[in-house]
Image (cartoon, rainbow, N blue to C red; front, side, top):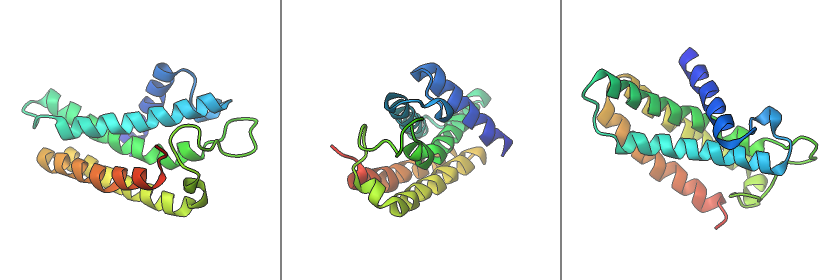
Length: 160
């Protein structure tokens, strides 16, 4: 559990360094909230794609990198409902429909959180497989997580 917290902190630090001051406690306007959402989604996408596209590790450093990407994938998935529900300071309601989501996400919040919960469970399974040294299993599980979760959620809730 300590590793997950460390990875989450590292994600937030990276997000802050890469995207400006965008941590939830500092999200003081719509632009900061949108930046936070984009960074978390990009982090999850890049980590998941890194796991899916990586060669099977054949040395200790490659193993550590592979497992690190799997942990990043799970840490980012854990943040999805939080960053979508994050409110900009001084605003009365969640920032809606400024970046990627349709209005339906807010009207069907329970469904969205169930879908993001399944994504998190699948991402944690990827992390568990990678941590156990089952790199081929982690690669396959990451691919299934993307196909089953990302696509279905985006088809339902992402505005084009």
